[in-house]
Image (cartoon, rainbow, N blue to C red):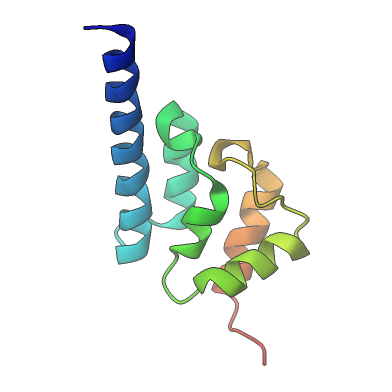
Length: 101
């Protein structure tokens, strides 16, 4: 297998792992806290942008996910495995609170 084929295979594996976590969060099979733990143990998932996983949380959506990230001073370009533990807790707590109008 050439270097290019190896790179393509690795990229496909990463896309599949990331999609698995995002789809699991979207369907409710994977809780957000579990997604963070998966990112810590699987470097392929860890390189997923946190915003993509947060947007997939049922009932949250793109706007609330990004507003919450801004409120917590969390850069939209941060990878899932780079989110600090105290910020993870704050995100999970923010998403369990009802939406205030």
